[in-house]
Amino acid sequence: MKRILLIVETSRSYGRNIMSGISRFALEHGDWSIHFDDRGLLEEPADWLRHWKGDGIISRTAIPSLQRILTKKCCPLVELHGDEKTHLSEVRICDKTLGEMAANYFIERGFQYFGFYSCSTPWWVLSRRLVYEKTITRRGFICNIYSGHSDKPLMLHPVWENRFEKPLRKWLESLPKPIGIWVVTDHQAVRVLEGCRDLKLRVPEDVAILGTSNDTLLCNLTSPPLSSIDVNGVTIGYEAARRLQLKMDGIEPAESSVNIPPLQIVTRQSTDIIAIPEPDVADALALIREQACKGINVSQIAEELGISRRSLERYFVKYLNRSPHDEILRVRINHAKILLRATNLSISAIARKTGFANRDYFISAFHRNTGITPQIYRNTTFSVSDIHLHDSGTEISAGSDQPLSPR
Image (cartoon, rainbow, N blue to C red; front, side, top):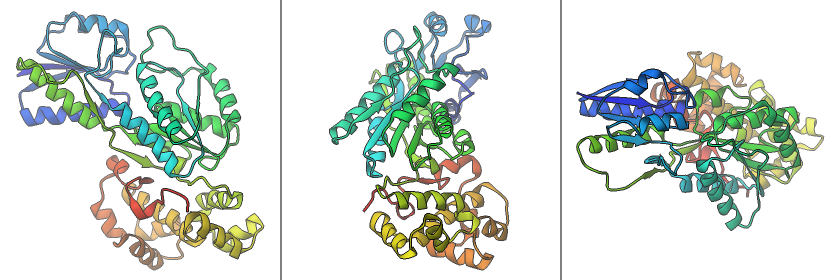
């Protein structure tokens, strides 16, 4: 049995996904004995690490003290973070695809204004930012880059500090609206959401926020739920394990490093919007998101906004190519999908919680929109632990559920 040490954080979903990919490789080959610690990305190395001996190591090294220890080990090592100077990452997210994906995502939703936020700028943040900014500039737009904080020496991963709150709010307040902001991690995206809430900026109507890593627990706990890019951590972990096996077999991998493309963008409420210049439509969409599952109807929306129902319907067809009623139904159906997959509530209870008059009407409406009944949907979709693969919002490839550009 090969003795393998994993120094990969278990405190974040990205690290746990990497561990899943490594575990999959180990199960397929059957000759790995794996040792790992529950740890955070920025934790100092434990004393036992200095004396550990084995056959191979996979590490995400974000602190110099850990780098120094690992360079003294006499066994093959696959690094997944590093500083890109003395300690290179061998398997990593393809920053080019990631930045282009984030930029095009907002462009396809009709945004004219774009932002990028990170509370510090280590090498991998700069790499992503440059691609994002270049893609937006190439399409004829300007990218608003946050540049309020400077890095601490040798800091390889952004660390949030309370003193960042005030500059962040000042930046958010200064931005043109509506704007789409890509945030370099989900944890920082939560801070941007909080800043918007403090300033009473509507998300996604004024500021649409896209995180990175798709930490499903974190993304679904925020208000509103956070859209994010699934960076394909399982594949990164599997490839890292494959490379380590080659090295232990005495074979040097053909490529010095491998870039793994992100998997998908998972749309939740924080970006579930099309940038629309008509205020009445934006306000109506905000009302629908807040009240659709409480039974609001088109006449009540028109009355609340002080416009005629006919004008409201005309605006919706012009900008969204669907009626206000269709949008209400879309929001209800999407929320019903979440409840069907993430809870054990009865079909009748889900009908009530999503604003349908009764169980039969809910079943009929769900079938018309999805082609299957709610029960079949529940039986054939993944468990709550896999909710990011389906409509916890809607992934960008979901077709008819989510139009990607205004008319």
